[in-house]
Length: 263
Image (cartoon, rainbow, N blue to C red):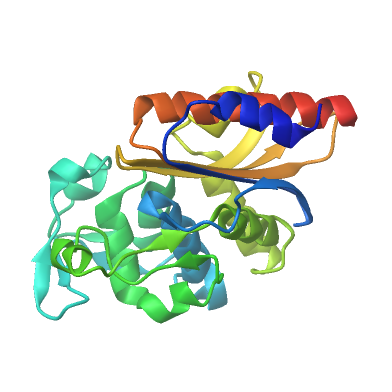
């Protein structure tokens, strides 16, 4: 049975839009299901922020950022981000203090920290992040509710997320040391309920997910050991919340079984 057919079996009766893209680790598309469909990005856009932050060495080991919770809105004026919407309490505990940029990058990815992300994005500006990959569009900071209500949003596609991570893994975006640093941060991911949950124990993966309840997405570089590495991206706009996480884990398991059997 073809992999796309296996995916379709898992998706039988699932509402909304689901997009999948499987690539070799060097970026060659292998299989896809509506990979170009746009989805609200949630926290997957933080992958592009990480790459932009490491490009050109603009965030060195000695760079520090002042931790604050009020940011410029895409509509003009300012907005204040809410701690209740964040998963990263460590950065909030440093409110008013200076924090090393490498620590913020790690919390942005491993903890999916929203405050950490906005601090990095504010320093970078949106343009360098937009330039990272055309399949990841970032038009506002996190928590900018007025901009969101006005239709200013951040979007991704499964093709874009998988293409971005594959390009990063192949060393096409950053120098080797920065590539290794980025993959190490992604491999330290603490939110592992989606693609990593569908892998056998102890299989190495580097991933970045995003979720809001309405959407659940994940993209991961997987190194099976006995088979070539691959990149899988799954975007779900289903409103299924935790059930969508379990769906992505099943799609990951199906992909793993197909990929390793063919090796």
